[in-house]
Length: 115
Image (cartoon, rainbow, N blue to C red; front, side, top):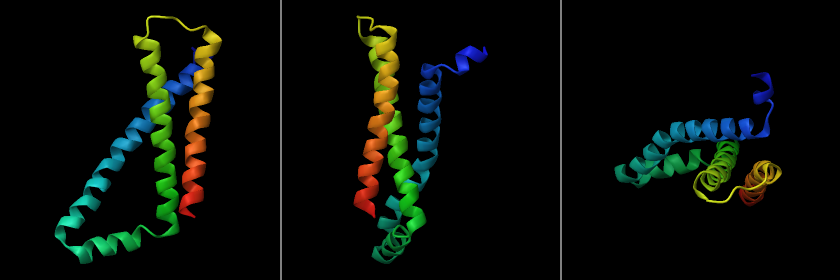
């Protein structure tokens, strides 16, 4: 069992599941922010001021990283499940690296744009 947990594909599986759970936890806060817009401009402006805090900006960066990881690892799973061809094992493991790298690149670009 220990050998399986050190496998790259296992960590891609864990990354996909954990990012999905954390994104699901984020959704109520997103709906709260949207709901504040319905309560009036003053409430929404107060929330937008809160959203300018550095800690919130860092949390947004984490959210973008989670979205990128979830997307990359989800696409990897879809390709593995639904494409009729079988890629070599090394290529499938490479997808994990490319997906992680792409998610981090998106996160860095977002970080540069935010700060």
